[in-house]
Each structure stands twice: as structure tokens, then as C-alpha cells.
Image 1 (cartoon, rainbow, N blue to C red):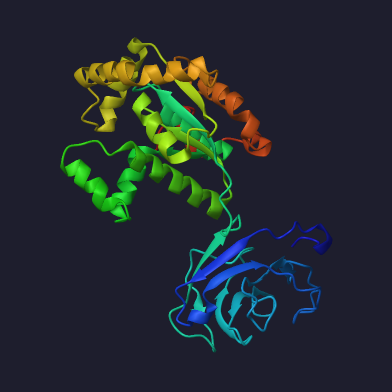
Image 2 (cartoon, rainbow, N blue to C red):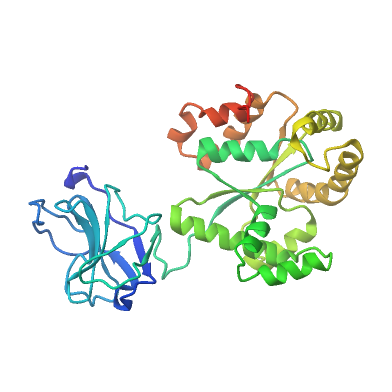
Length: 346
């Protein structure tokens, strides 16, 4: 446990919702309670209780401060009612209130127990702007693998528009019906919907994880995509940087045909490769040229081996990457992605 004198300021916020006791629901902000001795004899500090972060209700209605804190005596996180009596608890040793396990209805609580969401930034204020890098490359250029490595090793978040569309449909989200209608009609989902999904995903991840570095895999695929970006983010918003993964067609063809042996993808064949590459040249390369003309595009040769390519990616992302993450040893999964160990047998 941290020495109270060395504890960083509590800058986290907690949203509590869905409690059987509605008065418990609401926003909890870092506690401002003055130093006091807890039931276990631990001297608290502002924003902390029993050596862990603590929170008060944002509306200030609770008779107890802090209203959400950790008990050393009971080894549990606790949420109180407005009258100060405890309503819900979660027995664990987690440094922060758990968001992925069900809370318990305590003596003065009412079922169901609430859902708890941690926010790294004040949800009452605009979300901090994301740091975005567009990642573009032809089929088989390795952009997906390098984005996955950057997420695994460097702490960046890898987002794919295709995956976001599928996730929205599977979750029956607010845009699901509209997206499904476009797909049923055989039409492309409008750019503004795709970009809105990207924006919502980045804001949610920023607030709940504190991460602000995002790699957008395969976006923008066309100049038309950029119109959707400006529609959502505004014409005056700074243009993101772009990483362009360049690779000779012969090498792309070799890679994809080699991948076809185990990928199971219906488009991993010579005819589809040629069609996808021609589409890439026609639709996407003009976007690359636009970013080059504005000095916002870095070209990375992906024809060498994967470790060499990865070193170049690390170098170009270094400005916004945590140095400790960049220098840590490779995980087993990262070594598989880099070709340093074989894929595990199914």
C-alpha cells in the first residue's frame, strides 16, 4: 500500500446506476473529507480512506463522507445510503471499486445491487480529445498485425470500423437498426455513422480506461471517408497523422496466398487479391497522397521481416508511447505475431 504522503491525487470519478435503492444512484466525486482516523486505525488523507481512493456523492446529500470507500476491517468496498447506513458492498482486495463483479446487497440495501463504472475524467465535462493515427495499407501489408502488436506491447488501442459495425449490430445498439437496413439494401453504411461509432468508442475507452492513443485500422479508405470525419469532428479539427504501410504487389500476393492455407477467408485467392489491390490503388491511394501533401503521412516499408517493421512502427509512435511499455519484454502472443515463435496448435 502507498505511503499516504506519496499518494497521487484522486482524479477518478464513479458512476453508480441501477440500484434497487434509487437514492444510491448518481455520480461520486473524489472525497474532500478532512484527514480522520478510520475504523481500522488508519489515518486518511484528502481523496483517500484506508489508503485507497474514496468518493463523496457529487450532490453532497450523503450523511457520510466518504460515501464510497474501502473498509480494511471488512476487506470490502462499500456504498452508503443518504442517511449514512451501508447499502451495498463488494468483498475483494482490488485497488479500485470493481466494475466486473456483482456487488452484494448489504443490510440496509435493496436488490438489485447497482452497476459501477469508473471514469478517468469528469463525465460532466467534455471528453479530452483522442490522439489518433490512421493506419493504411494494401491487403496483406501487415497493418492489422502491427496494430495488434502496438496494442499488446505499447498500450495503444486498435480500432477497426468493421469490428465496430459488427459489435453495434450484435449489441443491438442505438444505430443497429439503421446499419442493418443499409446492409440489407446492399448499400454502404454512411460515413457519418461509421465515424460516429469511432468517436463514441474512443470517448468511452478514454473515459473508462484513461487511454487516449488510438490506431484506426483501414480508415480512411477513401477521400469520401474524410468527408464523414469532418462531418463528425469538424473541419477545423487537427488532421490526424497517418502511417502508410507500403509493400510491393508481388510480396502482398505471396503473403496472402501463404495465409490462405489456414485463414479460411473466401477472399484469399489470386482473383480477389488483384481486385482488392486495384480497389486500394483507385480509392485509397489518393487519400494517402492527400496526407503526404500535408506532411501528415509516414511511409513504412513492410516488405522486410516483421521484427524490423515493428521497430519502425515503435519509432514512429514513440512520441505518445509510455517508455516503460515500449521497453518491456515481448509477451508470448507478441512473439507469435512477430513470427518469433510458432502459432499454438489448436
